[in-house]
Image (cartoon, rainbow, N blue to C red):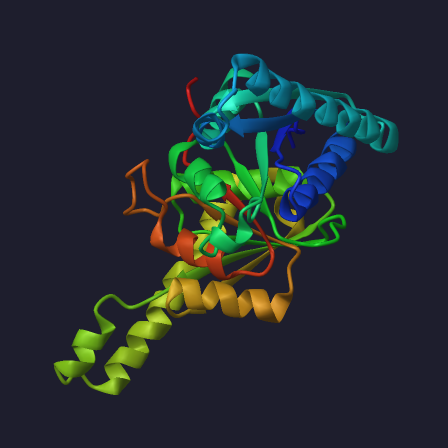
Amino acid sequence: MKSLQRILVATDFSGYANRAVKRAAMLAHRHQCTLDLLQVVSWLPLETLKRLVDDYSLETGQQLVNSVGARMKTLADLLTSHYGITVDHCVSLGRPHLEINARARDHNADLVVLGAHGEHFLQDQLLGTTTARVLRTGNHPVLIVKAEDPAPYRKVLVSVDFSAASRRALTAALCIEPRAAVRVLHAVEVPFEGSLKEAGVPEELIHRLHSESVQKASQQLDDFLEKSAGSEAGRITPIVEYGYPPKVILEQSWLLRPDLIAVGKHGQAETDVALLGSVTKHVIYEAERDVLVVASETSAG
């Protein structure tokens, strides 16, 4: 299984960002790869500062960037010393999600690691705006870190719907922690079940449709894993459950207590690159675990 070669982590020195930095450094140590440490100084606060400070000058803005740069170097040196890894660090000026995605693309990052919230946590709605925008507009695998005290991933839950995105999510999950036990979950429903009941279709027939759907999905999942997992199939446990996918995923998360949940960015019917699939949204907003979100293909750069 391919190892990670470069991990990009963005920080604003908030508590959630610090969790992301720790997780990224642990993964960089685990894979013996380069850690790319990035902070983006948003131009919007600088524009506000210009309006508030009469004697604002370009030197003032540069002083702020230099101050952040010095803090980043201190953090990079600390991570290098503690984890024994190579750390590149950079401070850029611009819109955070655009700069993060550009850095990931230009430096061929295998993984982008972000905190669930940014420094303006009280203004965020469930998920930090920068993280949400990176997810919507980027194509690199994104690891959203929620755990307060990161520990090695030992149990991973991967939700699949047999789409290209879920296939890549499985591959990425297997790569991130080669020693973890992996459970691959597929949730299945009978289409228009509510309408069938309203139309008076007998419960016996609907129950038979349930059984047939689960049986067919189990065979599909076995075929999917045979093609997608290869030699890694031995550490995978397949699970097929009947029900609404977001509800099933969260229920299994509660029962299995995984350290990481991996999902595809889009499902089979969700191809708009500017949006997240509905199932993915439910998982990243509601799951209490770290979440790995993977698109159907990486950016061409």
